[in-house]
Length: 269
Image (cartoon, rainbow, N blue to C red; front, side, top):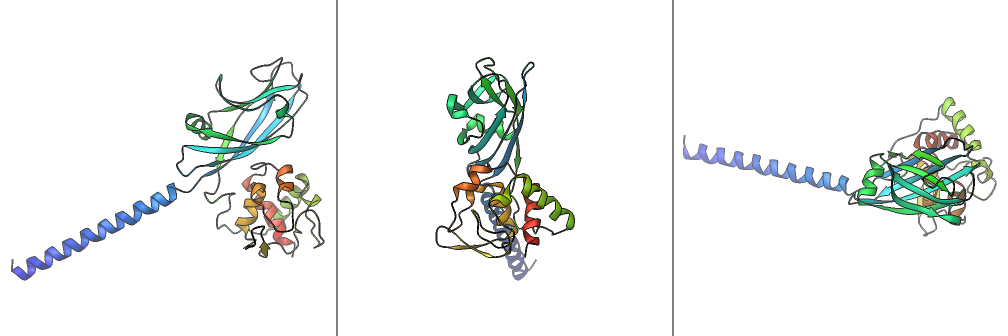
């Protein structure tokens, strides 16, 4: 092999090695960026009464994980009726073990909304769907109401939706209209452009929304899904940002339900 040919082979091999290293570097950074994006989960539990009790209840919320993926915050809401006595606590359990007290005593009234930090093994158990919610009373210290807590991952960018475009079909619009009535959305949002407690839905989709920090945001499908599934993110200038989150807990409206509601909103031009 001539000297020139050997040099050419060395150069080609070297360039291939550099290219391989560069591809690996970019891929690792892409994975790191993805891994560093906080994950969000909807959380829900259907609470069933123990034998002899006529109580019933629901638990809903949303979990936002930290970028490290080892902890997160559970924003939740619990409702119940028919208990044998005052609630002594709402518990997050794994089997018979109490992982954390979400609230205690009078702080656990029906309809209460709170945030609770989940760390380490507790966070991992919740994400793995290995936990239950228990509403305890004096007569039933381990839980008069109990239900498996189910977490479902949504969009990593928050609130579900991502860059997805919601199709405006007759079926979706009809379902969204029904859901809007079910969640009492139209009690605060008009559909004819008139002012109310919340922004009107007429012409909302695709419009520029002024925010409380002085900026504006486009009401894309992803944005609308986000604020519907997590009302705590709703920050619209001129409106009380706490009203919606008092009525609708994060995660109470599922991603699929939010998409239908968005289809209905998009039909109101």
